[in-house]
Image (cartoon, rainbow, N blue to C red; front, side, top):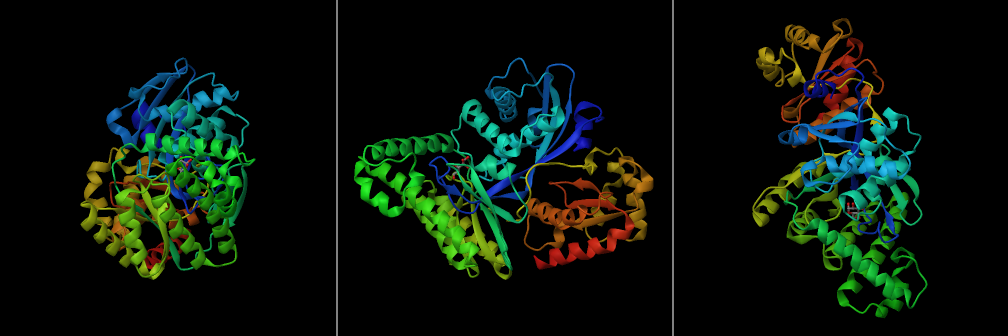
Amino acid sequence: MLELFNRTFGDDSDARVFFAPGRVNLIGEHTDYNGGHVFPCALTIGTYAAVRVRNDRKLRFYSDNFADKGIIELSLDDLTNRPENNWTNYCLGVIWALAQKGYELKSGFDFVCMGNIPNGSGLSSSASLEVLTGYAIKCLYGFDCDNITLALIGQLAENKFVGLNCGIMDQFAIAMGKRDNAIFLDTATLKYEYVPIKLDGIKIVIGNTNKKRGLGDSKYNERRTECETAIEELQKQVKIASLGELDNETFEQYKAAIADEIRLKRARHAVSENCRTIQAVEALNAGKLDEFGLLMNASHSSLDKDYEVTGKELNALVEAAWKQEGVIGARMTGAGFGGCTVSLVKEESVDAFIKNVGAEYLEKIGYAADFYVVDIGDGPSEIEAEVMEVEGCEHHHHHHELLQKVSLEMPDDEELADLAELFKCFGDPTRMKILFVLFEHEMCVCDIAEAVNMTQSAVSHQLKVLKQAKLISNRREGKSIIYMLADEHVSSIIAYGREHIEEK
Ligand code: GLA
């Protein structure tokens, strides 16, 4: 990241690096603006930024994911949502929302970012960017605000600046994420509980429909209005503040108050989905994973039939998933209208699952889906180890062949020495004892995004212990991920990484 900062703005002194995850919701969909429960978790994939405070009022932004937009230069004196500001509207929205809450920036900053959440896939790349911006600002300007406040600020930015009337789930899941835990959140009160997700021998597999986003946003706001109208109608009969206060029986008792068939279906989903979510968490806590899976399936059917936010792409992926061996449960996740599905799949069935579901989807829809096997990660953090990209190194081109070669096998001693030489341009050579390289092609089922994610979790596990380790390269388009480590740790990391990859 610092290398990207350097390349974009000339030098990286005083720049600091931050991360915020993406999220996946396991169950509890379209309940978060209805006062119901949700059950999302943060992922190990997410968005990275390197940021440095300026001493004037300028704001300069660059994203590696939108490189064609170049550097976007704005000012603290003009916090306005404009189409040409493109992706930076999410960041501007956060600056604006912070100011609304009394956290006003007196000077601007330079900001570069890149992310490995597929954009527009329903894994919350935008909420990730919002929380990332808020978190970086809080750290850099010394604002005293906690992560729940940052989540609320992200939501305010989205609602009032960007114009999507979303609930609190995404920003909350991202700001409050905890490794290996999902968050059982009551959106009416913001009371929450971490629930350990111990999925022995079971993987979370995301399927991306790759459907281009169309009218999603306006349909989202439409659903929200339908629910608001339904609640007004119900309030004439029963004293409630939100649909989340009703159970299925009480809803049946009063539903005649809703004058329109469509609104009745929408409200029925909001009520039944909230009940399913509460039940699903109970099932999980009781170790009844099969029951959890069945509730996921029922959630999808309700989102299809009553809420009507699935569409043929999500249905194709989920219906194909239901037929596979080793599937505990599968449903759409996020807002719907395209985006992603989430499935719980027995580890030994993951390869066949991806192959079969992928083939059936291609056959039905005419283009391919993507799959990611994901891990549950932590909320936002500052990254102390430097993260740099190989591309920025001026020696890179001379060593291109070497890099290609070592991306096929573990390098031998001579190649390691050459690589060490190559990476001297990244810092203090005396600290760089050895390099460790993990390779995408060793992993049978995954694409590059997944490989990055997978190897990152294998190594980041160890990196926690290894403050002296450096992540040299994490090239999404390339094939290798290269770490430099103190040599006493190398063999344990190789063993750990290999084992982790073989499991896949
Ligand atoms: C989007 C919104 C969330 C939530 C989900 C649907 O992700 O941002 O607030 O409403 O859709 O559950």
